[in-house]
Structures are given as structure tokens and as C-alpha cells.
Image 1 (cartoon, rainbow, N blue to C red):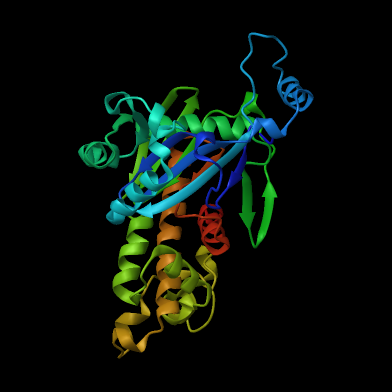
Image 2 (tube, rainbow, N blue to C red; image 1 turned 45 degrees about the horizontal axis):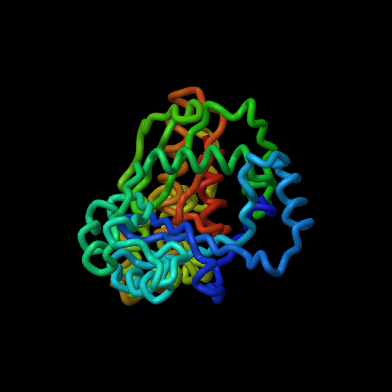
Length: 336
């Protein structure tokens, strides 16, 4: 992949003529945007370009050339879609790299888009940017992308437990079937049997949107990242009722429950003579994150068991590489 494109979260400063390949995922909570920015080929000689092509097996004259460049990513709250539209307009991303004087007529400009917002906001894109959204099925995009990454990108998948990340060695010939758990505003669980072969087998409404929504109401955090950062500093044991709280600090060894196992999320709020203002926002955030992650992990495990699947891959914006989230989901899966 290094020969195809680098990945960047930094704003692009390249000349407009080098920007192309805009695509959007317009979800219930967030808009995810990606565009491709080509390198300036004038800065690279023919030998370098030929070397990149040959490294990917593109030796014949009929092969497609490698488009060296960067993938740039951006995100916007769906409720602030006008900010996204302004960003696209200011960067002229919707013109696909064309200058104003040579841009195609508006009825021929299409932007690839997926997610429910591709339908909900189609008229708004037409009104504000004079473009049409070329809608792609959300689940098909998700599965196709996951299959590509798992088969083509080295060290794309990893396990995470007790603070240790271990990259998984994926054999493309032994990838299927697997369970793909995509955690967005809600959660979809998809049984993937091969390229183009998949079925949504389960899901839950308790996902990233639940964490964000309840967290916003309970802590007054302004955005998802702020809420997630707050959880780093919290102690869920202040709010969660543990097995040890019920059994006087001891394990319930007979059925294999340690004293630190959560018996009831937010359970201590029942018996404490406290109001919301008496609890620290960071403790609330930590408990909420633990509750959502535990629930997702358990349902995922049960579905893998139901279909006899040996692999579960978790994806989606909710995870964000956040150590505590990944660890909690892993603990929930391994608990059983």
C-alpha cells in the first residue's frame, strides 16, 4: 500500500489540480470524508514511476499506472452538515481536480456516497454544490472494504488485551467465514462468507450514538472526542456495582465471578444518596463506556458462537484505537 498512497489526517495544501476521488460516508452521527491527492509527478523521474509500477506487477503497457499520492481524511458531525459542505466547496473537492474553467457541467458531477445520509441529504448536496450523489450500498461498501484491508494490507488486524497489541497474521485463503462487527451510531453484526457473500445476522441499538448521546446529557461534554478523553481519567467502580460489593469484597467463586466483575452498570447510583452533580463526569464517562463496550463484546461473542465462527473483527468510529475501549471489548469476548 505504501506505493499506492499514504494516509494523512492533515489538511491538504496541494494545488487544486492534484485533488481527486472524493467519497463520503454520511452516517447518523458523523460524516466521514476521504479524498485522494496525487503527488506532483513532475517532481519524480520516469525511473521512479516505473519502479513503483513494476513493484506492483504493472509491467505491461496496458496496465494501469500507479497513482502515487495521499489519502486525506476528515470528519464532521452530521448535525453540522453545512460545515462539511463548506469544506468541500472551499477545497473544490466536488470538482474532482478540475479547474473552474474546465469543470464539467453540474449535471455530470457525481460524488460517491454511502450511508443513510446519502439519501437524506441528496437534495441538499444538489442545492449547495450542484452535484448528484452516486449512492453505494452501505453494507456492501463495509464488507468490500474490510475484505480488501484484511487481504491486502499488512498488519491491518490485531488483537488487544491487557494493554498488549499483537498483530494477526491473516491467511487470505483462510479468512472466511468471519463476523464483522461495525460500531457506528448503532451496531451491525455481519457474517462474511466470501467476496460479495455476506448477511447481517444481528446488531444492537446500543452503540457509539448511545455513548455519545447519554454522555452528552450526563456530563455536558460538547463532542465525542471530549467524552472519550474524559473517560481516561475516570473510575467506573465509583458508579458500577461489582460482585465484590454484593459479596462483601470476595469472589463468587462457585460460578467463576471475580470480585471485580461488574454485576450492575451504574448500580451504585441506586443506593447512594446522591444526585447527578455529586458524581464526577469522568467516572460517569468511564462507566458508560464500559457498559456499551461490554454489551457489544458479549453480543458479538454469542453471535460467533451461534454461527460457529472462529474470528470476530471489530471496526467503526466508536473504537478509534482507544485502548480502554478495545480492552473492554476483548475482555467481554474472552470472559465466556
